[in-house]
Amino acid sequence: METLRVAAVQVTSTSDVDRNLARCADLIGEAAGRGARLVGLPENFAFIGEEQEKLALAESLDGPPGRILGTMAGLAREANSWLLLGGMGERSDDAKRVHNTSVLLRPDGTIAARYRKIHLFDVNIADGAVFQESATVKPGADLVVADTPWGGLGLSVCYDLRFPELYRTLVSRGARMLAVPAAFTLFTGKDHWQVLLRARAIENLCWMFAPAQTGRNNEKRHCYGHACIIDPWGVVVADAGDREGLAVADLDFAAQDRIRKELPSLDHRRL
Image 1 (cartoon, helix red, strand yellow):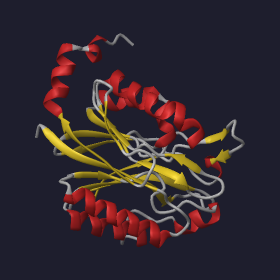
Image 2 (cartoon, helix red, strand yellow):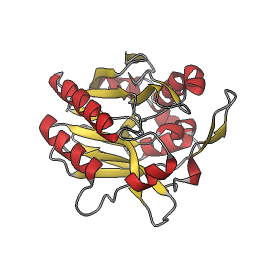
Image 3 (cartoon, helix red, strand yellow):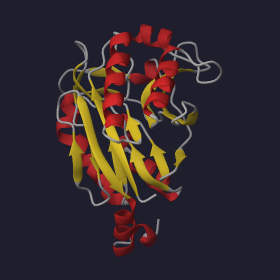
Image 4 (cartoon, helix red, strand yellow):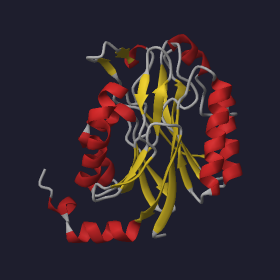
């Protein structure tokens, strides 16, 4: 399949899970109505709030689906689309920490792949915001390239974007698309978000697919937004701006093949 229409969702999630899921449902439906076969939600799409409540909301991805996963599986079926759940709490073997897990659902609602965020956001940035993700999140260890009808989809989450070796390995394992669902802060995002996404696209001659949080989630977090889709030449082909909505574009894999043939930098690697 040479082309794929994708939609990167942009929302402002809060501590109100029902509101968050309803807003995601609206945008998934809109994306499907616009012909998207792959729809992506951002990191923390279902909940952004107090850490202890995050622990309580975490679900197992094995066995009967919980509230969040069950709702999303139903939406994937309704839309008849592949649905990327950008980051949700998954129960771990540590009672005090969860995994921040990105889940890819098939159009029938079944799980095609899951990726547990490896790089955790432990920072004290210049605007005074302090984040200690590792206090309540257990890092993953496995890299994941999901099989789709359009080729390999390399999975990552937000802060992973700053670690280029992850993406180079995903591409070496067959990724043609790289997903970066995120809740990038306003302070870092305004200078780094699209610069890093464009760099990962150019380095790997890959499509970048980046759903995002935007706006004021709570008193502690203000997200940059600009959910976007970037082509293998590093050109931003769709950008959702700073409001809730969608970035929609057609991924042309024949064009990607031509770029990789004309500029075969992936074949020139010596390290």
